[in-house]
Image (cartoon, rainbow, N blue to C red):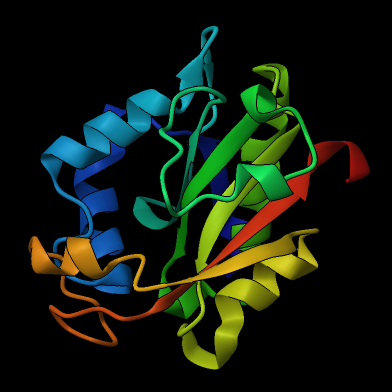
Length: 190
């Protein structure tokens, strides 16, 4: 199956399939026409696109949205005092999504590598992310750790406000109390 997978930089022609796959995997209301455009734009800096897609022929089977350094707001869900690097050079890995039928085949890791390379070209020296602790078998945290991620801090209820605003968590519904594991990958160590 994976020998037919092709990867490329994301563009607007991918948005409809990205919204459908994102909502299927992460829960209804996770992506919509407004936030996909906003999140996509945050991944482009200096003419370099850090967002990538994976296709099996015409079917989208995975995508990675990443934000360039300086394009995301550090709020109460971040712990920059623990990052041990220049905050202005930290990118954000927004989401890595792979179709259930294609998991375990290296697609997520390849998308992460592609984004990491693009983010480094944008000047990033690290990338932070919030991983879903309640993923089946804690697979999200295990995957990110395998890719070099280091745990910074756990944040209970990170997605609660989103669930109250229409995001339906696949685990909790409209009252999400899932824990986000704030993790960082230092690029110079890869």
